[in-house]
Amino acid sequence: MCVSRRSFLKFSVKIILFLGMDFLLPKGILPKAEAAKISENGEHLEEDYLLNLPVKHLRNIITKDARYEAMVMFQSDKPLKNPLLEVGRISEKNLKWFNVAEEKLTLGGATVYIYFSKVFGLTENAIYRYRVVSDISASEWGKIVTPKSEKTEIIAVTDSQCDGNYSDWYYTFNSATERHKDANLIINLGDIVDNGEALWHFEAWYKDIENTLKNKIFAPVIGNHECYNLKWKYFLPAGFLAEFKTPKNNGKDFEGYYYSFDYGEAHFIALNNNFLEIDDNKKGLLEEEMKWLYDDVKNSDKSWKIILMHKDILAYNEYNAYTNDYGGLNDIAHIFMPAFDELNIDLVLTGHMHVYRNRGHIYNFLPSDFGPYYLLCGLAGNARYDVPKDEVFDKVMAEGKETDNYLHLTVTKDELNIICYLPNGKILDKFSLNK
Ligand SMILES: [Fe+2]
Ligand SMILES: [Fe+2]
Image (cartoon, rainbow, N blue to C red; front, side):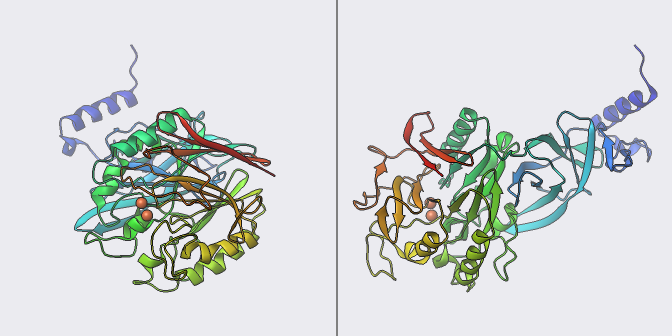
């Protein structure tokens, strides 16, 4: 067997490191990231690293246009030494470096180091691999799958919050992603975790999904539980804002609170309607967001316009101050539905009530054959509520006790196909919208 000097050196380095005797290593022998040779086109060939970099929760957060850019995030309990992100086409040996930014997050007495790296120059309908490299160590590889315009598959879930044991969430997420391997975008409509200040809730949420999550694109929405602190008082969603670097809205005061993105033939608008929880600590969200909403939708030429927002449009026995009523359309409905009518929104996905309800089209506050289509998406965690049927608007609901569920969306230029599945694969509801 012929062993090159280079291979021998690498083998020796690994043995020395394995024995914990890295002080024996002379400078310059290590296969450091900085030493990976960069060619004229800015690319380099893959180097060997120790696969022991202590990073966790590799994830790929949605960007304005996921065909061309990605936002890779990860974290560590201790600060990393000059981490870099390494990215390349899955079928090619050439790789590129991308810079990584660090943010120290201390929340509820716990600290974590959060890292994010904007990847650009991607091509649509392609598969890339990425990993984190720091000094002589690297993380495992994740995948970035960029969408194609003609047809996309998406999974949407809501209210994955759990009381501490997130096993119901893992089962729902893993069932959905296993059943629909081509669904590369995962949307979560809020109440992602039960308490927005408890870092251990975020940790638990990632735990049994991260092997799949690192290969998907994740689009999160802020729910009211992201705005609760450890004392269950309202607070600004510091955990969410640090954990998920969503696309910029370029607003004055609420960067990270709401955003929009294109995915395939659809334009998604992720609104924040937790005014009750946020207004006490910071004023002006609705005004800033409403102005942005009109500009954003009018500037999109995508076939479909889809709203994602956490709180639902029906009161279901909760008192609403504006309507001064416990039933029918709630305050959120009165704030947003005229705008959705005017902007020709196709579909509105909501959560918060932890039950599935299909209301069909609603226009001018009434059931209709046209206008935005409203879907209350159910739950993906373990907080189960009894919610009465709204006799005017609820057309389809689960029979008997509600279990977890998820939506599978297929989007083409002419058709939006939606199926609501239970985690066991049983279909609860399905329908299509056509252009
Ligand atoms: Fe919830
Ligand atoms: Fe909620």
